[in-house]
Image (tube, rainbow, N blue to C red):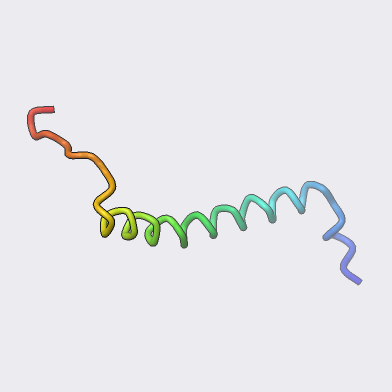
Length: 47
């Protein structure tokens, strides 16, 4: 049996990596959905 899975530091590290991967995968999909629905704001050239 793998015993290092019970260490809190390993669990925190694994959770952080999983959150990063989920964010990296879902963010582009979310941005495409928002653009397709026309949700956002107009940015002026003069600032």
